[in-house]
Length: 132
Picture 1 (cartoon, rainbow, N blue to C red):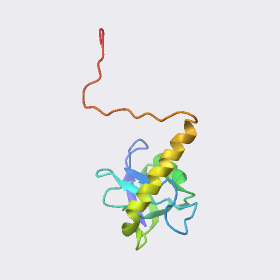
Picture 2: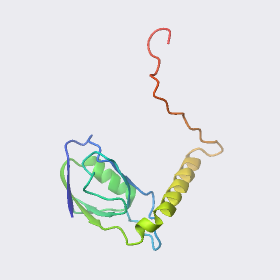
Picture 3: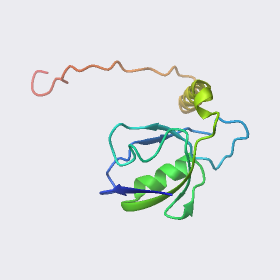
């Protein structure tokens, strides 16, 4: 059990979940942490590969449900978790490839018949105001 403190509902915890459990013997109700931000309430408290099982005593029903429950919570939160599996680190590259493919498939499903376009990132300021 881990306790996190989230100041307001708008506070970002810095947690990302795998879209689906990439491990053998996968469960649809799994919520496996895929990334933890360097800052934020979850940093140092949760680890990549851990399974979130409950939030405030409520059973998690998949990664979207876990994310929604965490996003809508504030104050002190009790999070029930299971440690990452012993083989998780050895298979992390494979799991990340599975996640990337799932993300591409989700994008293709939302844009049938269209090619997804990426927007180049830039640090240049966006032109604003008259004559911009």
